[in-house]
Length: 197
Image (cartoon, rainbow, N blue to C red; front, side, top):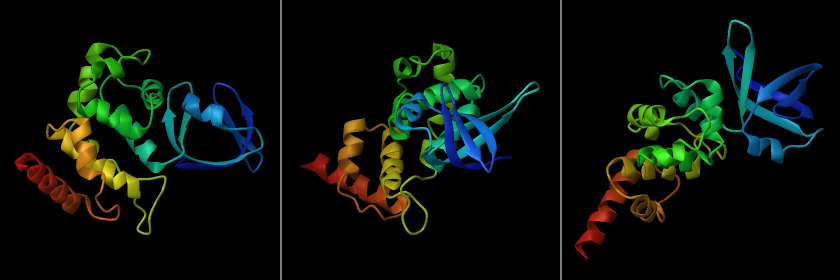
C-alpha cells in the first residue's frame, strides 16, 4: 500500500503528477487542490491506492482527516473512489460531514453519479460514525487537530438533534485542547443553561 507521496509537482491537468526520485506518480485529487498547486512546488499527499483489474489508481489528500473521511465514503455500498473524491470536492470535511449529519440529500446529490438512493445510503451508514473521523492537518502536540476536536463535538451535537447553528454556538468558546467526551459534556451543560434562561 502506498500511504504517502512526497515529491515535486511536474504536471497539472485533471490529476497531479508528482516526481519522487525520478518516478512520476499520477494522483487524483479534488479540483480545488489542482487550482492551488503549481509546477515545481513540493507537495506531500496522504494517499489511497485503489487496485483494479486494469489499473492502479492513486487518490491524494493534504490531511489525514480528509483521507479518513474518503475511506469512510468508499465503505458505503455503491460509492466508488471517484464518486467519493467528487463528494470530497464539495467543500471542507466539516461542511460535508454536517450535511450528512443533517441528512441534506440536495447537497450530496450535487455530485455527478450520486443519486438520491445513494445519498440516502451515505446518510444512513455514516451519520453515527462521523464523530470517529480522526484529525489532521493542523496538529497539536499529541497529533490531533485542535480545530478538529471542536468539529467532532459539533458533529456529535448535530447527530443528537441540535441544529448546525446551535452546535456551533455550543462549542465556539470551548478550549481547543480538550478531550471530545469532556468537551461534549461542557457543551451540553451550556445548552441546558441557555435553555433555562
